[in-house]
Length: 250
Image 1 (cartoon, rainbow, N blue to C red):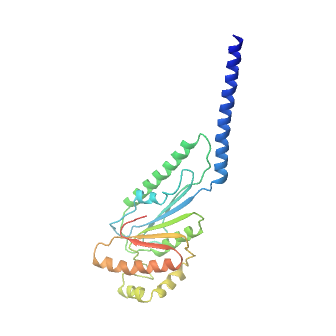
Image 2 (image 1 turned 90 degrees about the vertical axis):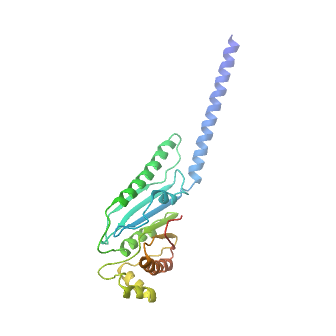
């Protein structure tokens, strides 16, 4: 009988050591992961034009694609602002800072990321349901302000999606005026100088800009060809990567 007790003690010791070694290995692996892994970061800004009714609006599913390369523990930043007849409009912000792997809290982190995306979807839906229609439209100032914030960010991926026809119509500039459109097409550098005098842009190197608009008729199409080319050349000259399309493809 004593020999059986001895065997039991020996087995208990072996089990204890095995469990201790397993826990130690997991802890060491976690420490190594935390030490060697540099979290990725992505920063998305959406500008939604509310001065008129547009065929294409922001979508949560498309916005999520910006963060498709991010893992569970990475950093997520999101801003959403409206374009109206005012230079200053409210901005919605949501951040999910990077976190380090800790045993036992993976489900908490997963729920945090789910909450981030739910908030993103909810805010986009709310913005799409806001009233539309303004007598004027201030596009450049909100765009420049958001680009400046992205330029100051250290995020690995920085993206701005502009849902707008780009038709500036303020007291000083009116893109609906055929003379202004002609000047925009034939002397783009003059208009760039005018806008940069109002709000200079920093270097936009590393920033993606997606301009999304679907024309409803021939006139909108003709105007958008001029305006989108002007914006594309302007922002590309500052170092940004610019795409112009009728629907968002990331």
